[in-house]
Image 1 (cartoon, helix red, strand yellow):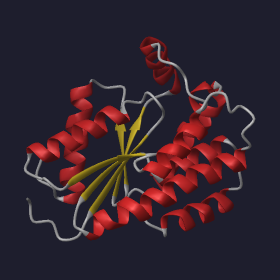
Image 2: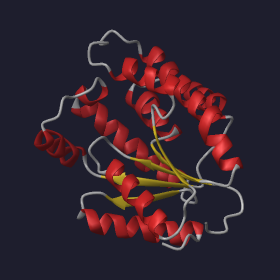
Image 3: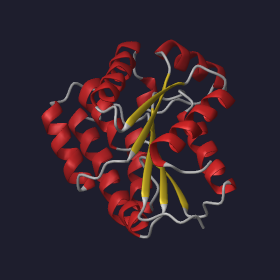
Length: 215
């Protein structure tokens, strides 16, 4: 195992069908191939039994009557569980966490997308995570029309969030870019419309430059 002092927390963010999940998997594989055998991949919502149960409820397309505040609290409950049960212990054990979504998803989807009070969302986020933030957040950015084309090409069943209208996702994307501009020390924005290998190369380069990992 590489000599890593303390844990490292990396998160991926972006619209659905931005390619972030594929890049998350590729980074985990690249780190393991480079000799880091302490890599812990996670997804949100989910990752542990209680959070996976919440995921099924919050993403079920049949739950169309779900209130925006209910949605906020469910996502946050799932995050509180995975943070306490898995993320914090893993970081304390010196592992590398690579998370497919984390707290920024709630800020942009429920705060900006659902137009909930941003101060309230921020307070709920801090409470759910014990104010824990990743050291590096990789935003795989694509315009909504690119994500939509990929979604249509994949011909997959849409979950409840993926069924939202264009205006919702345009607010979400704009919010992601706003967060990245506000926190340049944590965020790296990567063009997700490029070829998959090109995106992966930029991800690896960002990890090397920001965190000093040798991949």
